[in-house]
Image 1: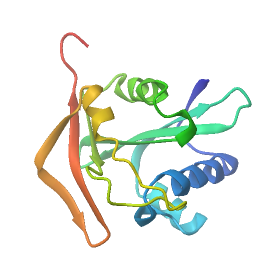
Image 2: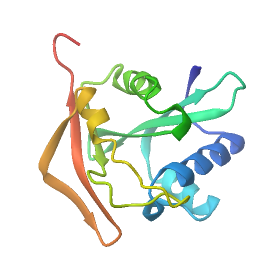
Image 3: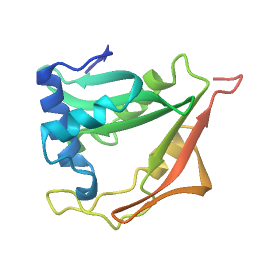
Image 4: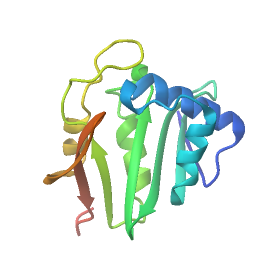
Length: 158
């Protein structure tokens, strides 16, 4: 596996990442068209992408960080076939590099389905194991999505 950092995604990379997004995220978060996905990417400020490539140079993971209201936010998507193998932690390490804090939204329940009708398993425990803490009183509550804010802060021993 190899991690490739980039500031701009190529057309091929966008197609692969959108496919990953729609396969792995809950149905409620799907981008139905490339135009919808590109619009989302366009709204991100100071974005940095990290692509996880397998031995055949296929994209099997994507992480990105961006600035929102002076804070650094992030998201990660991994192909389900490589969960629990340490690759998510590797991508998190890339995101944490040169940062003092990271913020994200995480679904904290198992009530949503993925596009293949399988349960979307909350990644909350993964983030807790990687040094994040939950901000219980800050939630994203939309008609189609419920998530809690998580944050990581660099410590002197990191």
